[in-house]
Length: 267
Ligand SMILES: Nc1ncnc2c1ncn2[C@@H]1O[C@H](COP(=O)(O)OP(=O)(O)OP(=O)(O)O)[C@@H](O)[C@H]1O
Image 1: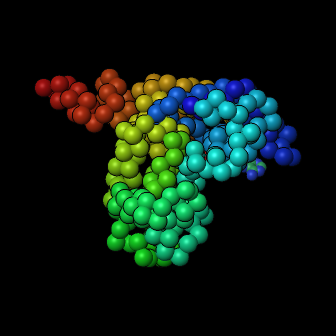
Image 2: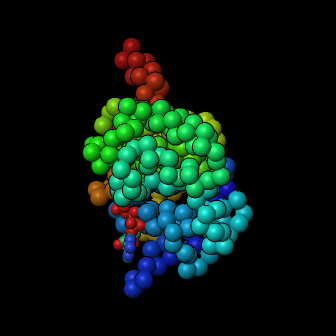
């Protein structure tokens, strides 16, 4: 669905390339997490995938079509983005108006717009906050407003930059319910995250980016426990893997598998 073919990118005035000859492809419905140290190039890669930046070399395609040849309107239909600072993508004075805005840019009837808006508000548990000013909400709720805008539009490709950031346990659960809903409905998802517990809970494929290069690509059970990710300065090990290492257990991937292994071990 989304493909990077020999893509290189250098920021203006930078002496070195930020991304080097990158090859990457995501098939329809695939959910991929992008991990790596600060400055590895993750957000740059996401902006290239959104068509907000243009590659200096190579080609990025969406459904086989060169992204740089697609009109902004078409890209907006196909791609939904959640930025790291979600409040910067909020412009309206009520939660409902914010969610409705994207729908009004589409060829929909008033009834369809109302239906999609109310469904998205319900899915994101924002119905009771619909008349509030988004900037009067706390950080997690504001991030959820940006999520509700995506939920209303249901684009086939989602690009999420550190989505679990700012959520307390209550809102994280609601966000994770929406994410599971997107996964079940076949949405393709590329997510940057520093939260490796979150990654290991939701993603079956993890790409480790380091210095603008893909250094690992595979299931979380392999990628997240590599020594490079455990080095000081890199990301903390997901809790289950850290426990496994400390207890010399195998590497079960879910809390259920972990508790089973633990009970068998202590019996
Ligand atoms: N707007 C910009 N102008 C110039 N250089 C930039 C710009 N944005 C990022 N960079 C540089 O590109 C490199 C990669 O940055 P990027 O934000 O893509 O990394 P990242 O992996 O997303 O980091 P983080 O995890 O901290 O968000 C860094 O060296 C950064 O300084």
